[in-house]
Image 1 (cartoon, helix red, strand yellow):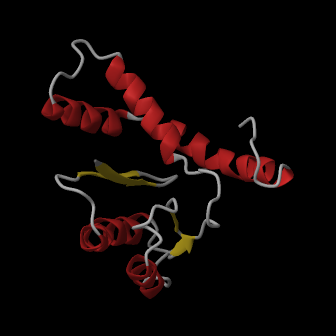
Image 2 (image 1 turned 180 degrees about the vertical axis):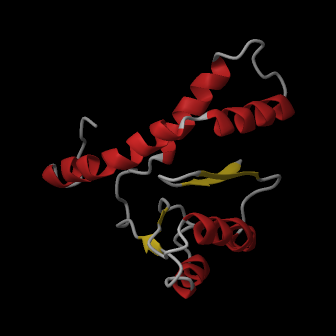
Amino acid sequence: MVWDVCSWRNMGPLIRLETTLTGDRYLSILRDHLHSFMSIVHSDGLGQFQQDNATLHASRVATKRLQEHSSDFRHFHWPPKSPEMNIIEDIWDALLHADENRSPPPRTPMDLWTALKDEWCELPLRYLQTLVESMPHSVAALLCVRGGPTRY
């Protein structure tokens, strides 16, 4: 499992999770990686953090941790059971497609991890910016169909 963060301005760290993600481990990722990334990339405090509604992400302890840092950045809340709108899904598709086209393809978990890190660092910033800029259109399309299926 992997955790990552990015913004319109920069790619953040790609963190390999050696074990199952627990509440304590998620809090340490927020503390050790998210807060430092946001403070560097969005030192003005205007950054927004988006995550899905995974159980650990929506837990009381994680929500409390994010609220404690609300002056550093905003946490973009997703309604419960809402469609997945996180641009990270598009990024992961691009990374996996790039890995499939590697020659030779990754054969071991360590090879895959190395390839993912390489591809993560090679993603063009303009690609990331295009994904971020597409969000208003995607949200508008979702609102038009009242949360139903869209064509974005």
